[in-house]
Image (cartoon, rainbow, N blue to C red; front, side, top):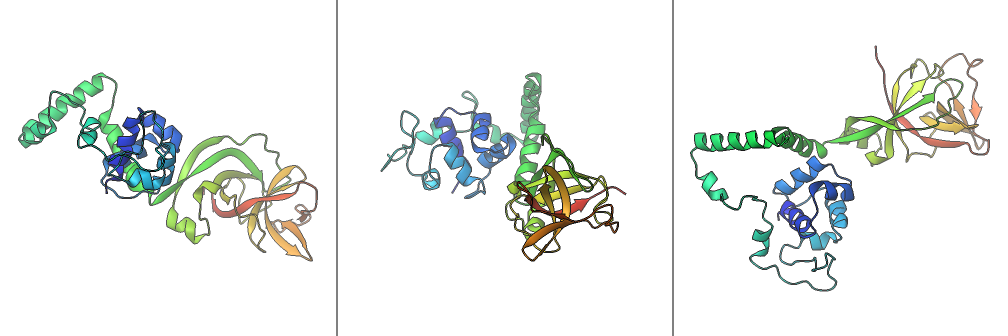
Length: 281
């Protein structure tokens, strides 16, 4: 089954550009382009793309019938069988006067000259075809192996507390999906990166470290490190629960400077578990 051909078919039927479908599905343009151009029967993005096209997964994967009506809506009940001409009408080959089989029949060196001429024209139009193709290939290869975690412009205090007024995204870092799963992070979309300010968690987490937080893990486990909200301020602390009360402890041995913080105030909450720390040497 050619999932990519199906996605392209319905995208063209709906008169959507790659950018428009990428925006609807939450995918990157390069990843969507790679999906359309590879011969694959499945993708981790199948459900998102189907929903963005207004189809069910079953309809998207049905190569025999056309599930979009003349008004661009998904058909209910049954759908007409695709005509033999339908795939050709929206085929990916873009040239009306030069057939694909003609170019493929050229000798290797002649085909290279033709490709070079096309790249020159595209470059003149401001399109870097080589870079886009390379990005699509890299994105496609990495999507299944790596997850990309947002880095937010916010500092969590390992000291006397920090108030976060905004948490805008400022880039991403990649992590292997199998490593994330081993840490119990089953959905990387629930994870964020943030910086640490202060020495209360030193030497475990030095000042200036970057930490990875799983926002879905909000149930305290004794001895684990969490980002917490206490008395209207954010902290990074190790949690211990005793006699029903959870307290945020510092790893810094100076407990006089950094005493435990009982999470008993109204509005106190666990933001998420910290499961990775990176810092410069």
